[in-house]
Length: 345
Ligand code: PEP
Ligand code: MN
Image (cartoon, rainbow, N blue to C red; front, top):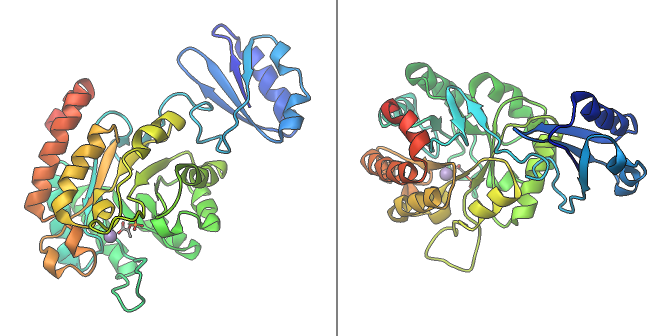
Protein backbone atom coordinates (compact mmCIF):
# COMPACT_ATOMS: atom_id res chain seq x y z
CA UNK A 1 0.00 0.00 0.00
CA UNK A 2 1.21 3.54 -0.62
CA UNK A 3 0.03 6.72 0.99
CA UNK A 4 0.33 9.74 -1.30
CA UNK A 5 0.57 12.94 0.73
CA UNK A 6 -0.84 16.22 -0.59
CA UNK A 7 1.58 18.67 -2.18
CA UNK A 8 1.18 21.05 0.75
CA UNK A 9 1.32 18.39 3.48
CA UNK A 10 3.38 19.56 6.42
CA UNK A 11 6.25 17.61 7.96
CA UNK A 12 4.21 16.93 11.09
CA UNK A 13 1.35 15.50 9.01
CA UNK A 14 3.82 13.24 7.22
CA UNK A 15 5.34 12.19 10.55
CA UNK A 16 1.90 11.50 12.04
CA UNK A 17 1.06 9.00 9.28
CA UNK A 18 4.51 7.38 9.33
CA UNK A 19 4.58 7.14 13.14
CA UNK A 20 1.09 5.65 13.40
CA UNK A 21 1.86 2.90 10.87
CA UNK A 22 5.31 2.05 12.20
CA UNK A 23 4.00 1.97 15.76
CA UNK A 24 1.63 -0.77 14.56
CA UNK A 25 4.55 -2.86 13.34
CA UNK A 26 4.23 -2.05 9.63
CA UNK A 27 7.30 -1.29 7.49
CA UNK A 28 7.36 2.39 6.49
CA UNK A 29 9.47 3.81 3.64
CA UNK A 30 9.45 7.49 2.87
CA UNK A 31 10.12 8.78 -0.62
CA UNK A 32 10.30 12.54 -1.02
CA UNK A 33 9.70 13.70 -4.55
CA UNK A 34 10.02 17.27 -5.75
CA UNK A 35 6.32 17.84 -5.27
CA UNK A 36 4.85 15.06 -3.19
CA UNK A 37 5.94 12.73 -0.47
CA UNK A 38 4.99 9.10 -0.80
CA UNK A 39 4.87 6.74 2.16
CA UNK A 40 5.24 3.09 1.18
CA UNK A 41 3.81 0.62 3.67
CA UNK A 42 4.82 -3.02 3.86
CA UNK A 43 2.91 -5.60 5.85
CA UNK A 44 -0.20 -7.77 5.78
CA UNK A 45 -3.01 -6.08 3.87
CA UNK A 46 -5.66 -6.66 6.55
CA UNK A 47 -3.42 -5.00 9.14
CA UNK A 48 -2.95 -1.92 6.92
CA UNK A 49 -6.66 -1.56 6.39
CA UNK A 50 -7.29 -1.41 10.16
CA UNK A 51 -6.16 2.22 10.26
CA UNK A 52 -8.16 5.10 8.77
CA UNK A 53 -5.12 6.61 7.07
CA UNK A 54 -7.17 7.99 4.18
CA UNK A 55 -8.92 10.44 6.52
CA UNK A 56 -5.74 11.71 8.19
CA UNK A 57 -4.68 15.29 7.59
CA UNK A 58 -2.43 15.90 4.64
CA UNK A 59 -3.27 12.58 2.95
CA UNK A 60 -4.31 12.80 -0.70
CA UNK A 61 -5.00 9.12 -1.34
CA UNK A 62 -4.15 5.57 -0.42
CA UNK A 63 -3.29 3.19 -3.24
CA UNK A 64 -2.98 -0.57 -3.01
CA UNK A 65 0.14 -2.00 -4.67
CA UNK A 66 -0.81 -5.39 -5.98
CA UNK A 67 2.62 -6.35 -7.36
CA UNK A 68 4.66 -8.51 -4.98
CA UNK A 69 7.72 -6.25 -5.25
CA UNK A 70 7.28 -3.15 -3.13
CA UNK A 71 10.62 -1.42 -2.47
CA UNK A 72 11.65 -2.09 -6.08
CA UNK A 73 8.30 -0.76 -7.30
CA UNK A 74 8.18 2.62 -8.99
CA UNK A 75 4.95 3.35 -7.12
CA UNK A 76 6.97 3.35 -3.88
CA UNK A 77 9.72 5.53 -5.31
CA UNK A 78 8.64 7.50 -8.38
CA UNK A 79 12.03 9.10 -9.11
CA UNK A 80 14.78 7.06 -10.78
CA UNK A 81 17.29 5.60 -8.34
CA UNK A 82 20.82 6.82 -8.97
CA UNK A 83 23.67 4.57 -7.91
CA UNK A 84 26.97 6.25 -7.18
CA UNK A 85 30.07 4.20 -8.02
CA UNK A 86 33.26 6.17 -7.47
CA UNK A 87 32.86 9.43 -9.38
CA UNK A 88 30.26 7.99 -11.71
CA UNK A 89 26.49 7.93 -11.27
CA UNK A 90 24.61 5.00 -12.82
CA UNK A 91 21.20 6.16 -14.02
CA UNK A 92 22.19 9.82 -14.07
CA UNK A 93 21.96 10.35 -17.83
CA UNK A 94 25.51 9.57 -18.89
CA UNK A 95 25.63 6.11 -20.48
CA UNK A 96 27.53 3.79 -18.10
CA UNK A 97 30.30 1.82 -19.82
CA UNK A 98 31.62 -1.23 -17.98
CA UNK A 99 34.15 -3.46 -19.72
CA UNK A 100 36.81 -6.03 -19.06
CA UNK A 101 37.63 -9.68 -19.60
CA UNK A 102 35.30 -12.49 -18.62
CA UNK A 103 38.08 -13.75 -16.31
CA UNK A 104 41.12 -12.09 -14.83
CA UNK A 105 43.95 -14.20 -16.26
CA UNK A 106 47.13 -12.43 -15.17
CA UNK A 107 48.33 -9.12 -13.76
CA UNK A 108 49.59 -7.98 -17.17
CA UNK A 109 46.33 -8.93 -18.89
CA UNK A 110 44.06 -7.03 -16.52
CA UNK A 111 46.28 -3.97 -16.34
CA UNK A 112 46.58 -3.72 -20.12
CA UNK A 113 42.80 -3.99 -20.45
CA UNK A 114 42.13 -1.54 -17.60
CA UNK A 115 44.33 1.09 -19.22
CA UNK A 116 42.48 0.67 -22.48
CA UNK A 117 39.05 0.91 -20.83
CA UNK A 118 40.18 4.09 -19.11
CA UNK A 119 41.64 5.52 -22.33
CA UNK A 120 38.36 5.19 -24.24
CA UNK A 121 36.36 6.74 -21.40
CA UNK A 122 34.93 3.62 -19.72
CA UNK A 123 33.58 4.03 -16.18
CA UNK A 124 34.26 0.66 -14.57
CA UNK A 125 36.43 -2.41 -15.04
CA UNK A 126 34.84 -5.85 -14.91
CA UNK A 127 36.67 -9.13 -14.41
CA UNK A 128 35.76 -12.49 -12.91
CA UNK A 129 38.03 -13.95 -10.22
CA UNK A 130 35.65 -16.69 -9.06
CA UNK A 131 33.89 -18.09 -12.13
CA UNK A 132 30.57 -19.97 -12.24
CA UNK A 133 31.61 -22.38 -15.03
CA UNK A 134 29.22 -24.97 -16.44
CA UNK A 135 31.98 -27.59 -16.27
CA UNK A 136 34.06 -28.30 -13.17
CA UNK A 137 37.00 -28.99 -15.53
CA UNK A 138 36.98 -25.48 -17.04
CA UNK A 139 39.13 -22.63 -15.70
CA UNK A 140 37.59 -21.58 -12.39
CA UNK A 141 39.29 -18.20 -12.02
CA UNK A 142 42.34 -16.97 -10.10
CA UNK A 143 40.37 -16.49 -6.87
CA UNK A 144 41.71 -13.94 -4.40
CA UNK A 145 44.81 -13.37 -6.53
CA UNK A 146 42.50 -12.21 -9.31
CA UNK A 147 40.82 -9.75 -6.95
CA UNK A 148 44.23 -8.44 -5.95
CA UNK A 149 45.15 -7.85 -9.60
CA UNK A 150 41.83 -6.03 -10.10
CA UNK A 151 42.57 -3.78 -7.14
CA UNK A 152 46.00 -3.05 -8.64
CA UNK A 153 44.35 -2.16 -11.93
CA UNK A 154 42.08 0.25 -10.03
CA UNK A 155 45.12 1.83 -8.37
CA UNK A 156 46.71 2.41 -11.75
CA UNK A 157 43.65 3.72 -13.57
CA UNK A 158 41.15 4.90 -10.96
CA UNK A 159 38.47 2.65 -12.48
CA UNK A 160 36.06 1.09 -9.97
CA UNK A 161 35.95 -2.72 -10.03
CA UNK A 162 32.97 -5.01 -10.73
CA UNK A 163 33.41 -8.71 -9.95
CA UNK A 164 31.12 -11.65 -9.27
CA UNK A 165 30.75 -12.91 -5.73
CA UNK A 166 29.58 -16.53 -5.72
CA UNK A 167 28.98 -17.30 -2.05
CA UNK A 168 28.34 -15.65 1.29
CA UNK A 169 31.71 -16.67 2.71
CA UNK A 170 33.48 -14.60 0.02
CA UNK A 171 31.72 -11.34 0.87
CA UNK A 172 34.24 -9.98 3.43
CA UNK A 173 37.07 -10.58 0.93
CA UNK A 174 35.12 -8.86 -1.86
CA UNK A 175 34.40 -5.86 0.35
CA UNK A 176 38.15 -5.30 0.58
CA UNK A 177 38.82 -5.37 -3.15
CA UNK A 178 35.78 -4.47 -5.25
CA UNK A 179 33.44 -1.52 -5.74
CA UNK A 180 30.42 -3.37 -7.16
CA UNK A 181 29.34 -6.87 -6.15
CA UNK A 182 28.10 -8.77 -9.18
CA UNK A 183 25.46 -11.43 -8.59
CA UNK A 184 25.60 -13.79 -11.53
CA UNK A 185 22.67 -15.13 -13.50
CA UNK A 186 23.01 -18.55 -11.88
CA UNK A 187 22.79 -17.06 -8.42
CA UNK A 188 19.91 -14.69 -9.08
CA UNK A 189 17.68 -16.77 -6.83
CA UNK A 190 20.29 -17.66 -4.23
CA UNK A 191 18.22 -15.95 -1.55
CA UNK A 192 20.72 -16.27 1.33
CA UNK A 193 23.37 -14.65 -0.91
CA UNK A 194 20.96 -11.85 -1.90
CA UNK A 195 20.19 -11.18 1.77
CA UNK A 196 23.87 -11.13 2.61
CA UNK A 197 24.78 -8.57 -0.08
CA UNK A 198 21.71 -6.62 1.03
CA UNK A 199 23.35 -6.23 4.44
CA UNK A 200 26.38 -4.50 2.89
CA UNK A 201 26.41 -0.97 1.53
CA UNK A 202 28.21 -1.82 -1.72
CA UNK A 203 26.39 -1.35 -5.01
CA UNK A 204 25.14 -4.66 -6.41
CA UNK A 205 24.92 -5.54 -10.11
CA UNK A 206 22.08 -8.07 -10.20
CA UNK A 207 22.06 -10.15 -13.36
CA UNK A 208 18.83 -11.65 -14.60
CA UNK A 209 18.60 -15.43 -14.26
CA UNK A 210 18.80 -17.57 -17.39
CA UNK A 211 15.11 -18.39 -17.22
CA UNK A 212 13.80 -15.82 -14.78
CA UNK A 213 10.72 -13.75 -15.47
CA UNK A 214 10.99 -10.00 -14.97
CA UNK A 215 8.87 -10.36 -11.85
CA UNK A 216 11.17 -13.02 -10.37
CA UNK A 217 14.14 -10.78 -11.13
CA UNK A 218 12.53 -7.79 -9.42
CA UNK A 219 11.69 -10.00 -6.44
CA UNK A 220 15.39 -10.83 -6.20
CA UNK A 221 16.15 -7.10 -6.17
CA UNK A 222 13.50 -6.80 -3.45
CA UNK A 223 15.50 -9.24 -1.26
CA UNK A 224 18.53 -6.93 -1.45
CA UNK A 225 16.53 -3.73 -0.88
CA UNK A 226 14.61 -5.27 2.03
CA UNK A 227 17.90 -5.78 3.89
CA UNK A 228 18.63 -2.05 3.62
CA UNK A 229 20.93 -1.79 0.59
CA UNK A 230 19.27 0.58 -1.92
CA UNK A 231 22.14 0.44 -4.46
CA UNK A 232 20.92 -2.16 -6.92
CA UNK A 233 21.72 -2.02 -10.64
CA UNK A 234 19.79 -4.52 -12.76
CA UNK A 235 21.55 -6.25 -15.65
CA UNK A 236 19.70 -7.88 -18.56
CA UNK A 237 22.10 -10.56 -19.88
CA UNK A 238 19.90 -12.66 -22.11
CA UNK A 239 17.47 -15.47 -21.40
CA UNK A 240 17.19 -19.04 -22.69
CA UNK A 241 14.92 -19.42 -25.68
CA UNK A 242 14.52 -22.05 -28.42
CA UNK A 243 17.01 -20.15 -30.62
CA UNK A 244 20.40 -21.81 -31.04
CA UNK A 245 22.32 -19.42 -33.32
CA UNK A 246 22.90 -17.18 -30.33
CA UNK A 247 23.96 -18.29 -26.83
CA UNK A 248 20.96 -16.54 -25.25
CA UNK A 249 18.36 -14.04 -26.41
CA UNK A 250 19.00 -10.53 -25.12
CA UNK A 251 15.56 -9.54 -23.92
CA UNK A 252 15.38 -5.88 -24.82
CA UNK A 253 11.69 -5.83 -23.93
CA UNK A 254 12.92 -5.98 -20.35
CA UNK A 255 14.46 -2.50 -20.58
CA UNK A 256 11.26 -0.44 -20.94
CA UNK A 257 9.24 -2.93 -18.89
CA UNK A 258 11.65 -2.66 -15.95
CA UNK A 259 11.76 1.13 -16.29
CA UNK A 260 7.99 1.23 -16.15
CA UNK A 261 7.73 -1.10 -13.15
CA UNK A 262 10.78 -0.06 -11.17
CA UNK A 263 12.96 2.93 -10.31
CA UNK A 264 16.16 0.87 -10.36
CA UNK A 265 18.75 1.52 -13.09
CA UNK A 266 19.21 -1.15 -15.75
CA UNK A 267 22.19 -1.98 -17.94
CA UNK A 268 22.47 -4.57 -20.70
CA UNK A 269 25.13 -7.23 -21.20
CA UNK A 270 25.14 -7.99 -24.93
CA UNK A 271 28.17 -10.32 -24.59
CA UNK A 272 26.34 -13.04 -22.68
CA UNK A 273 23.14 -12.03 -24.46
CA UNK A 274 24.42 -13.18 -27.86
CA UNK A 275 27.57 -15.22 -27.16
CA UNK A 276 29.28 -14.18 -30.42
CA UNK A 277 31.40 -11.02 -30.72
CA UNK A 278 30.00 -10.30 -34.20
CA UNK A 279 26.62 -9.40 -32.78
CA UNK A 280 27.75 -7.66 -29.60
CA UNK A 281 28.11 -4.10 -30.91
CA UNK A 282 24.72 -4.16 -32.64
CA UNK A 283 23.02 -5.30 -29.45
CA UNK A 284 24.93 -2.80 -27.31
CA UNK A 285 23.61 -0.07 -29.61
CA UNK A 286 20.11 -1.55 -29.43
CA UNK A 287 20.20 -1.74 -25.63
CA UNK A 288 21.12 1.93 -25.30
CA UNK A 289 18.55 2.88 -27.95
CA UNK A 290 15.93 0.99 -25.90
CA UNK A 291 16.80 3.23 -22.95
CA UNK A 292 19.25 1.16 -20.90
CA UNK A 293 21.38 3.25 -18.56
CA UNK A 294 24.54 1.51 -19.71
CA UNK A 295 26.33 -1.47 -21.15
CA UNK A 296 28.64 -4.13 -19.68
CA UNK A 297 30.80 -5.97 -22.23
CA UNK A 298 33.55 -8.56 -22.31
CA UNK A 299 36.79 -7.57 -24.05
CA UNK A 300 40.15 -9.27 -24.52
CA UNK A 301 43.38 -8.32 -26.33
CA UNK A 302 43.48 -11.80 -27.85
CA UNK A 303 40.04 -13.43 -27.69
CA UNK A 304 41.27 -16.69 -29.26
CA UNK A 305 43.48 -17.23 -26.23
CA UNK A 306 40.96 -16.17 -23.58
CA UNK A 307 40.47 -18.69 -20.75
CA UNK A 308 36.71 -18.09 -20.77
CA UNK A 309 34.13 -16.57 -23.11
CA UNK A 310 36.65 -15.75 -25.87
CA UNK A 311 34.08 -16.22 -28.69
CA UNK A 312 31.93 -13.38 -27.31
CA UNK A 313 34.80 -11.04 -26.39
CA UNK A 314 35.48 -7.93 -28.43
CA UNK A 315 39.08 -7.09 -29.28
CA UNK A 316 40.24 -3.79 -27.82
CA UNK A 317 39.91 -2.04 -31.20
CA UNK A 318 36.41 -3.32 -31.74
CA UNK A 319 35.50 -2.22 -28.23
CA UNK A 320 36.72 1.31 -29.02
CA UNK A 321 34.43 1.26 -32.07
CA UNK A 322 31.51 0.07 -29.98
CA UNK A 323 32.05 2.86 -27.45
CA UNK A 324 31.97 5.50 -30.18
CA UNK A 325 28.73 4.12 -31.64
CA UNK A 326 27.00 3.70 -28.29
CA UNK A 327 28.00 7.24 -27.30
CA UNK A 328 26.47 8.66 -30.45
CA UNK A 329 23.16 7.00 -29.62
CA UNK A 330 23.28 8.12 -26.02
CA UNK A 331 24.09 11.68 -27.09
CA UNK A 332 21.12 11.69 -29.44
CA UNK A 333 18.84 10.50 -26.62
CA UNK A 334 20.21 12.58 -23.74
CA UNK A 335 22.00 15.52 -25.34
CA UNK A 336 22.01 17.69 -22.23
CA UNK A 337 23.43 15.12 -19.82
CA UNK A 338 25.96 13.72 -22.28
CA UNK A 339 27.22 17.22 -23.07
CA UNK A 340 28.12 17.60 -19.40
CA UNK A 341 30.54 14.71 -19.69
CA UNK A 342 31.73 15.29 -23.25
CA UNK A 343 35.28 16.14 -22.16
CA UNK A 344 35.71 13.10 -19.91
CA UNK A 345 36.70 10.52 -22.51
C1 PEP B 1 30.02 -13.13 -16.42
O1 PEP B 1 29.70 -11.94 -16.27
O2 PEP B 1 31.14 -13.49 -16.84
C2 PEP B 1 29.00 -14.15 -16.16
C3 PEP B 1 29.32 -15.38 -15.78
O3 PEP B 1 27.76 -13.70 -16.38
P1 PEP B 1 26.31 -14.40 -16.19
O4 PEP B 1 26.17 -14.63 -14.71
O5 PEP B 1 25.38 -13.39 -16.75
O6 PEP B 1 26.34 -15.68 -16.99
MN1 MN C 1 31.62 -14.33 -19.12
